[in-house]
Image: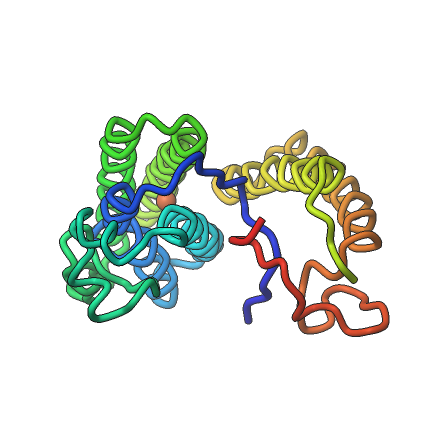
Amino acid sequence: MWVYEKKLQYPVRVSKCDPLMAKFLMEQYGGADGELAAALRYLNQRYTIPDKVVGLLTDIGTEEFGHLEMIATMIYKLTKDATPEQLKKAGLGAHYVAHDSALFYENANGVPWTASYIQAKGDPIADLYEDIAAEEKARATYQWLIDLTDDVDLQDSLKFLREREIVHSMRFREAVEILKEKRDEKIFF
Amino acid sequence: MTIILNEEYYQLLHELQAVDFVLVELNLYLDTHPADVNAIQQYNQYAKLRQQIAHRYETKYGPLKNFGQSLTGTPWSWNEAPWPWQV
Ligand SMILES: [Fe+2]
């Protein structure tokens, strides 16, 4: 069961209408290393991972939905006052034709999200290594996004998300160690 | 309940977001360090503080959670704006 909380995890403010930046941010909305992929990856893997790390996957997966809502808020705020002409100029003409100003799970190039972005191998170490890689790729993407905007308000929220990826990566690395310890215990006895 | 998006609103919202951030951090930390008694103490301490701040927020601005996880006043204001992306 999930319960919705009517607030963002961290404030999202933007200082101008910027549909081009919104287009870039779609990479973290519906892209391969984005927040939707992260949430769905972890929450799906948790059913067959050893009990010791189910809590961690549940909690990080849930937090990723909060990040998805933050990215959605950025895209919404950056495009809500844009005219069709401005969207077209920003490379969102095709998006406008298919979706008006609605959000859609697609990457920065307009490619729709696909489950082939994520994996569940059933092997706990393989799954956790994928999760660590996903966090590192998301961290890098946030850095490139920060580099692409001069909006300090937007940068502030993006820096928060970048730091969260670092923490998630660290926790997943610790989960690997916990599982390795368990595995070695079994071999020893 | 009409919410006026003034300084007071944002301040209380930030207070809630700040304490919730501490709780998310402690929660993930405890998931991989379940024997850390100090962290558990902090977690419970912040959870109590969280309840107080959430109560103050909800009294002024309406329920934060659905499905009976928050008490509601009259009239039903859960489905009223502003939603998180609108503030
Ligand atoms: Fe993450």
